[in-house]
Image (cartoon, rainbow, N blue to C red; front, side, top):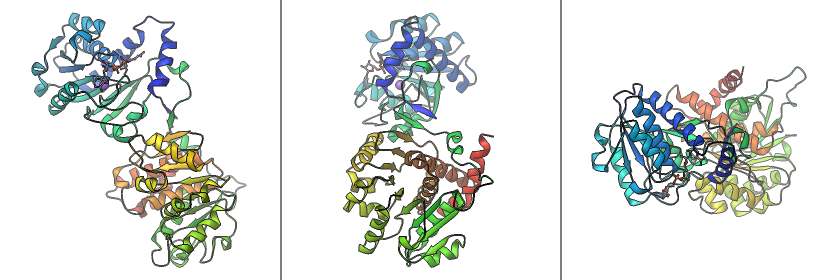
Length: 478
Ligand SMILES: NC(=O)C1=CN([C@@H]2O[C@H](COP(=O)(O)OP(=O)(O)OC[C@H]3O[C@@H](n4cnc5c(N)ncnc54)[C@H](O)[C@@H]3O)[C@@H](O)[C@H]2O)[C@@H](O)CC1
Ligand SMILES: [K+]
């Protein structure tokens, strides 16, 4: 599990750690890590042209100290100071001692730079990047130099990923102590590039994280192989309500995904029964009501089921049970009209909206996706899986996961139906809703990555790749 930490969580931890250390110890550790990674990215340090963008806080101090280390190894380092009187004095002195030079923006040589290090602002930033910083960023990023951000790309809100104005579009972000949410979610995710974490020794003093990312190993732990005592019922029976006689596709994809994630038993209830059974003879189908399907441990309801009164009565029948339920797609439209169907439940419910569905349920997502998912979850006392470039899962207690897998190729018809089926299968095993939802997003993203290795993907490819994805995840942890 990778913990994501806000500035408000990091600062006291840093203070606590610093209490027993020399005042500049953490900054020196940060700068050493920064210089080492920059050297690795450059390949050859001697003679490399490095430009530092230096703000007046400690983020600029990090850049100056790292620049000093690179200069000491023979790099030609130039520093542009946004506020000459405010620049970190120790960092500036170290840079000059090592042969680095302070220059005006016009003399930075961005057009010939090998690497630009953005130390304008880190976790101390607020609001849109101010005009002089924004102008400097525009010029710096137009050149050929490798774009490396110190701690957080300037202009990205570290806690949320909000990007309210101009920002440094980094190819790499070298972050200290812990990964910040803004590097992995929202608009910030798209500006952070590859994230490198430098350990500055905070491990023992960090509180519980604000949010987490699951790793392959975390998800693999939920995908254990059947034991000798297992039978088709003991692995968790999923019930699927999806698709219609006219449009059976959602039922086929959702049922297939559930079967392929955790083969045991999948039951299907609805008017797409004929299409589903043709595609998946392994599923037990009924064209009747959910109550006719037989016993299940979790329901998935919604993809392609329609939004008329019949669909509403079917959804209501499932939501009055004391079983975990995933509500997706058309089911979300129905819940937005009848939120009490979810609010009044005591069993776990997972809602899986994309942004427009979320807006219908809870109002606009806004720039802070973590806060939005938490808000929705608290409002209806459920788990919200907010789909996106980095899917966010929050439960009613505020526990939050940010997904770390996936590919833009997943933005194609039917992939949501697959996710709903994967999630239903995991929920039926008895996993808590938030774990099931976060694991499903992770697995779905990995299946997408695997399918994309073979070319442009369609949703059916994800279903086909699920067994191999599960095998790879399990294999990755031996
Ligand atoms: N606190 C610690 O113990 C450590 C901090 N470190 C570094 O210190 C950084 C935090 O330092 P600070 O608290 O000094 O804050 P920052 O350096 O992140 O930001 C403060 C500076 O940014 C300016 N600023 C704020 N918003 C701005 C905007 N919208 N446009 C332009 N300028 C803006 C402020 O005027 C101020 O000069 C971290 O991001 C990290 O890089 C690291 O050295 C590791 C240890
Ligand atoms: K920065």
